[in-house]
Length: 155
Image 1 (cartoon, helix red, strand yellow):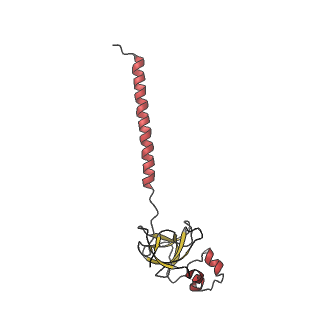
Image 2 (cartoon, one colour):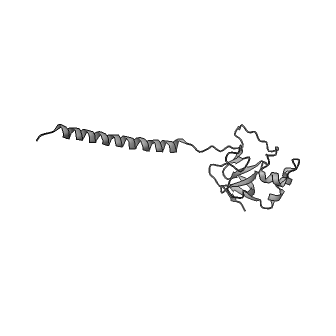
Image 3 (tube, helix red, strand yellow):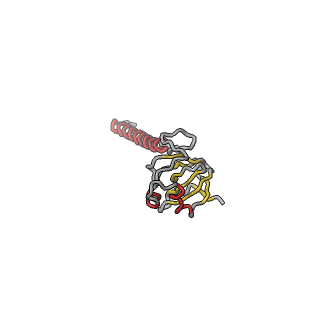
């Protein structure tokens, strides 16, 4: 039985390539898993949390584009501004187990004005035209927008 240098070199080269491929596949898989696990979802903000945006229930929220079009008078009361949408309002509760973030306007980049706990009662005032957002009012009187589909109607 003769062992040639050529045969040994082919074996070592093949073994090294197999180890390199396994290592590269392992690194790629671990990078994928770590990036999926390492990015946490945004934390909801609740009413009792300190926040950089201080909102008191007595303060009127900034008018949304829909409210500004309905009530151009800046001295109008909040009840007068909400009266056109009051006809379609209904009682609801939060169905999202982690709670909801309430925003000033119906978009994800709008400032957060508070948070709503799971199963908390609220009033849905209106839906955005595309149905992706809902304008809500809490029992404390504060209003804001939440992502649509995370509330359920209460009888």
